[in-house]
Amino acid sequence: MLFNPSSEPRDRLAARCRKEGTVWLFRKKSVPKTELGAFANFVSEEGLRHIEESSGKSPPPRKENIRYIVLQVRDDTPEDLQRHLDQALEVVVSQGGVVESIMSSIVSVIFKPTPDPQDRPVDALLSRLGSNVRAVYGHGECLRGFLGIPAAFSHGTILPNFNRTLEILLHLEFGSSTEIFHPQSS
Image 1 (cartoon, rainbow, N blue to C red):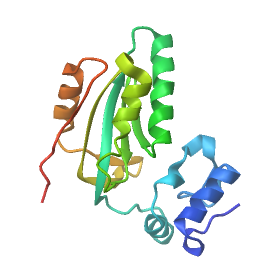
Image 2 (cartoon, rainbow, N blue to C red):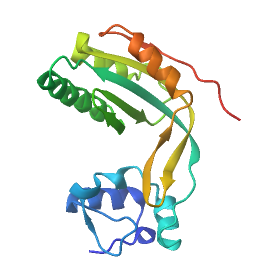
Image 3 (tube, helix red, strand yellow):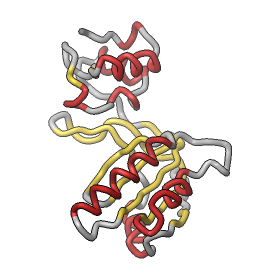
């Protein structure tokens, strides 16, 4: 089935993609969801229209206000890693997170901004995993969108000073978290 993103709102398109198990992207035919994942969940309607109209050229990344968590689960054994990773992913997804990347025991997740300071997904993560997770979290304006070159692209978020974020994460004790602040870029 062909998807025409310009003919229906993004939310309805994403719901239909999830229900039918397919995702529209760059191709003339539907692609099995297992091949591309839930890509339609975080591509804006404008982005899908631009893709359709530009014959495969992706729109440039845009600044967006987001919240994020970069976490590490305990990985003493491969079985521990898998169990803790599954639990962490269940928590962050249930809290409205979009998993940006998983590299072994480290996961980056983004969330929509919220005006409620009590809405802290990191609390749910620590409550569920306890001493089997450590996390760094924050918020700010970050570049989001298609990254890379046509032959090797991804949709994602560029967190500023990511090396600093990882350094802080790796120095935390398991079972703890800390908020970090990034200066707003101009």
